[in-house]
Length: 64
Image 1 (cartoon, one colour):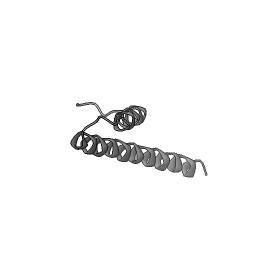
Image 2 (image 1 turned 90 degrees about the vertical axis):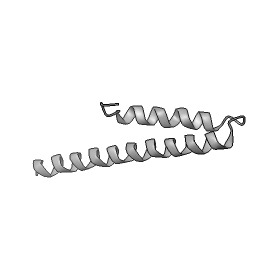
Image 3 (image 1 turned 135 degrees about the vertical axis):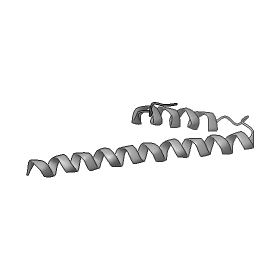
C-alpha cells in the first residue's frame, strides 16, 4: 500500500482483529498472527496520536 492509512482506519482494523481473536474456532497459529498484526496496528495508531498531540502542543506554544 503506497498511501498511509489513517488513524481511524488503524483503529477499525484493530477492532476487526479483536473480533476475529474472539472466535474460539480460530486455530492457534492464526490467533498468534492476528494478535501480532493487531498489536502493530495499535502501535502505529498510538504513534499517530502522539504525533498529533505534539503538533497541537507546537501550535499552542506558537500562540503564546
